[in-house]
Image 1 (cartoon, rainbow, N blue to C red):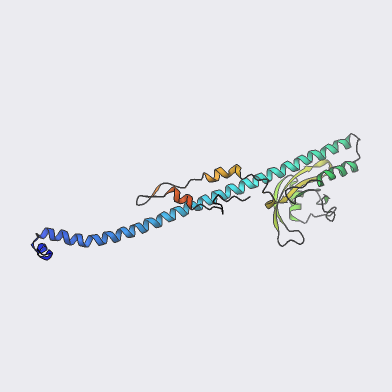
Image 2 (tube, helix red, strand yellow):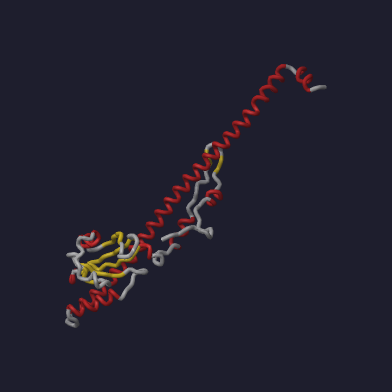
Length: 248
């Protein structure tokens, strides 16, 4: 029997069901496709949002760790040398050295040290005059009009950062400095170096595990789609070797 005759012989209720089904199925398929597209976009948006937050958290963690490491290192250098300077001062008080001899020996010790790749120790007094410096041309100059020197004159102790450009260099670079005050000689003992030279001071392994343990959400988005952890991990920024990028 032909399909057309079969349909024509069916009761009216079956004809209505078949007609409704024929109309509903295409719409259902279309709605499913649109729904999948919407859910996929929501998934992408949530993943990107989580990645953005994780990146911001990672950046903040790295910057804080680097700053604290540099700060503590410079503080240790400055305070240790302050103790050395004080030891020569004590010899001066005991009459074993004259003031000139004590300052000369203290200066020799300060200038014999290198911080990071090109950093150094220097001293400036409370009037902004450089009393100890590895560059002979700077020694004895009054630099109270230089912003970071005026800050040293005001604070005398603590940590600061500033940009500095040496003659012949194409651009200024950020430097870090810790200063401590030796009052008997009016010396602000300063340990300073460019921030980008502290790659050996900062131990990336100290916070690598904290960064790598950052978890992305594994909760459903509307529609019952769960964000796969493997996909979010795959999207994490990596270095050429596939490992986590870690920069000082």
